[in-house]
Image 1 (cartoon, helix red, strand yellow):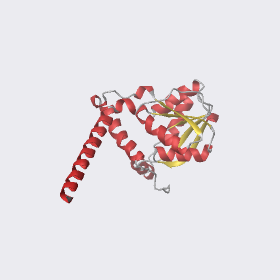
Image 2: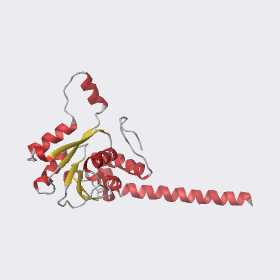
Image 3: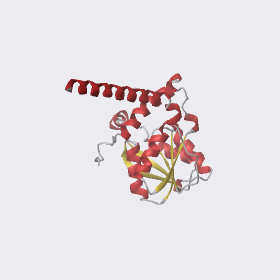
Image 4: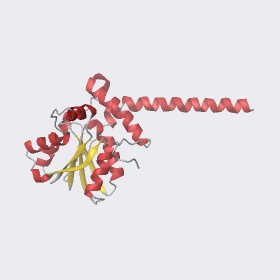
Length: 215
């Protein structure tokens, strides 16, 4: 009787594992659709352009010129090991936030409309937490500018961290993933990076720099 029950339990576990594996494969194959479900930009109280890609401040400047926000927030991002090595060897290499600011200024965003926030920001979670500390609990409308493949996770994170704000997330049009993402090197690289990060976040995982204590 016990053997029969144990065998039945194993069969159930096998079916559950198989179903989970099939669901994971289905999600991965359709990532070109569900990862990049961006929002239509609307006029907001503030805009934040996330770190990680220089196409983001270019698009943020275009949105600013369209009147989508009067203030653009730029995070002070984590310095990568190679960049820190250059700093230690006195080789000039600009900080990402400085490049972002230069791009925004070149594209017509006034200096008075650009504001830095946070320090040593390693992840989207840290960016959201640092911004919340600067702009407060809301209410208000916040437009988040990032890459298309990052839109879904960014929306989840900012809505979790800033529940008092109405969050809209816009992806840079030039970076749109291919629907058949595996057919292009850049799309494949982005999906294989973003898919596990999304799962990790849903499971409660959070990346933070060493200077920021985990909650």
